[in-house]
Image (cartoon, rainbow, N blue to C red):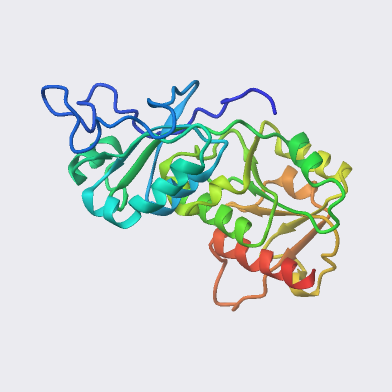
Length: 294
């Protein structure tokens, strides 16, 4: 892995310039926030960028991921009653321990997150994951005859990218690859949409998507692009072996250079009265078709 913590584009607020969540006016923690962290006697120190994740599934998945480092966990009393026991188990199994949850009001959690974030009474400040590059993916999938990866071209909505990552995890894809420019950061919105899958599927950002496709070809991947105007229906195509599934954003679709680097273009046969599917739906259908074949 190279250039650790390079992807600093997340737009999640850091909380700087506000009252510190979990603290009242005289500096004391609300509820149980003054208890020592489990396992190591104090909160772990985060190096590099940090971000806020929220929602029960994303937070639990992040805290269970040994590659993550967590510095704070904010919870309402209701959330602690629901998942507190699971956090205790995670804290005992984590060699570095976990920070003790600070029991706070929903309003305090709201102030740490983007407006309208659906946090379910749980938020965690964590360290960004180390970057993964194309070479990491080529090494990780070496020798896997039915390896799958997804490439996203001009997909800018974090909800869509998160949903694609969730489908990738469901169908055992090794990675979701997207360009560094014009793509969403891996912050709370994307993580919430991925529902914990961000901890299981590698998210790879590349400078040049065409070069990334060329490298995947060298590693034995068959690059298959999706296009509503393609002649070949996906259910009639030969999709055996290692496949890199290439999807474009709604409206624009695949860029010309991306399309030219695909070995085959296929379409999902849908009602002629509909122009296209949402990219996350198209990814799920295509991944299912690949899984069904293998």
